[in-house]
Amino acid sequence: QVQLVESGGGLVQAGEFLRLSCVGSGSGFSDNAVAWYRQAPGKQRVIVARLSGETGKPYADYADSVKGRFTISRDIAKNTVYLQMNSLKPEDTAVYYCNRGRGSSVDTLPGDAWGQGTHVTVSS
Image (cartoon, rainbow, N blue to C red; front, top):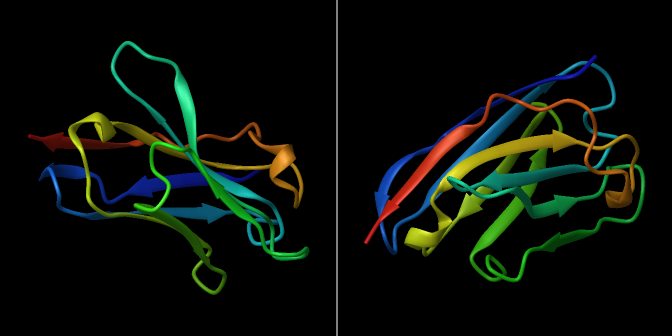
C-alpha cells in the first residue's frame, strides 16, 4: 500500500515560485506513473501534470493553464516527485495533491492512494 505525503505549499505573491514535494512509500513508486492534481475552493479536483513511470519511454504532459510554467520531475533515489511552479498566478490557488498510477502509463492515473494535500495561495 503506497502512502503519499505532500509538502512545500505556502502563501506567495503573483509572479513568484514554489516547489512542491511528494514523498512516496511502498513498492512501485518509481515504476508507476505519477501526477499532481489540484482542487480550488468550490471546484472539482483537476489534473495539473502527469509523468510516466521509469520503466517505459519518458512522457510528461501538463494542463494548458500551467504549460510553460510548471514542471513535474522525479528523484528515484529519494522516492520523491516534485512540481516546480514558476510565475504563479492567483488562479493557481488550490490544494495540491499527488497521486500514483496503477501502472507505468499515464493512462493508469489516478490510482487509489491520495496524500493529504498541500495548500498553495497566490496573492495578487
